[in-house]
Amino acid sequence: MYRLDEKVALVTGASRGIGRATALALASQGARVFVNYRSGREEAERVVAEIEAGGGVAEALGFDVADSKAVDAAVADVVKRAERLDIVVANAGISKDGLLMRAKDEDLEAMLDVNVRGALALARAAIKPMLRARRGRIVFISSVVGEMGNVGQTSYAASKAAMLGMMKSLARELGSRGITVNAVAPGLIETDMTSGIGEEMRGKIVGQIPLGRFGLPQEVAAAVAYLGSDEAGYVTGHTLRVNGGMYV
Image 1 (cartoon, one colour):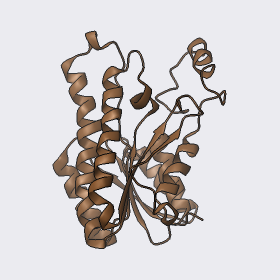
Image 2 (spheres, one colour):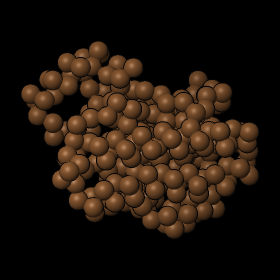
Image 3 (tube, rainbow, N blue to C red):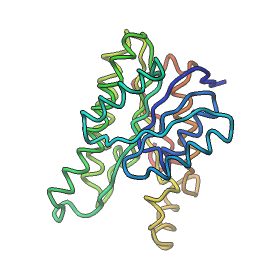
Image 4 (tube, one colour):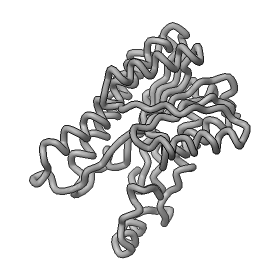
C-alpha cells in the first residue's frame, strides 16, 4: 500500500526535521524526490545521498520559498527535467517565538513571507502542471498551534492557521480536476525546533499529551506519504492531526 512508483515529489524545507523525514518516506515508497533547501546545501545533499543509498532517486534543489519568482522557476525546472509533478509538500517554515507586544515588524514579515506567502507561491506554481495532468497531491504542513493557539506564538499560530484556510479553499477549487489538497498538523515533534525546550517545560508539555511523549518526524512523514498516495484519492480538504491527542 501507498506505493509512489513513477511519481515525482517536491518537498520544501527538506534538509532536516520533518521535511527530511518526508523526503525519505516518499523516496522509500518509490517517488523521485526533489529535496529543497534554502541555505543548508550540505544537509540537503546528505538527504539525497541517504535516499540514493537506499536505492531511491533524489536531487537537491536550492531556492527560497519567500521568493515567488524563485519558486516559479524551480517548479518549472522540476517539470522540465522530470516531465511531471505529482506531489508537492509545503513544509518550509520558520518560528520566531515571543509575546506579540514585543514582536518586531521584520520578524512578523519574515514569518509571513515563508510560512504563508511561500506556501501560496508553491501551491500556485504546482497547480499549473497538475491541471494539465488532471491529477496531483498538495500537502501543507501546518501545526497543532494553528488549531489550538499557544502563549508566545501568536504570529506563528496565525501563519499556520492561514495554511488551513488556504488548504480548504484550494480543495474546493481543484477537486473537480483530480487534485487533492490536504494538511498535516503535527504536535510537538522531536526536531531542531523543539530541541531547546528545557526538561522542566518538556515534562509539563508531555503531561498534556495523552500518548505521553513527543512525536517523531517519521510519524508525520508517514501521514504525508498516505495523503500523497493513490489510496488517499478520496481525501481532500482534510487536516490530519499527528499530535498524540494534544488537540482533538
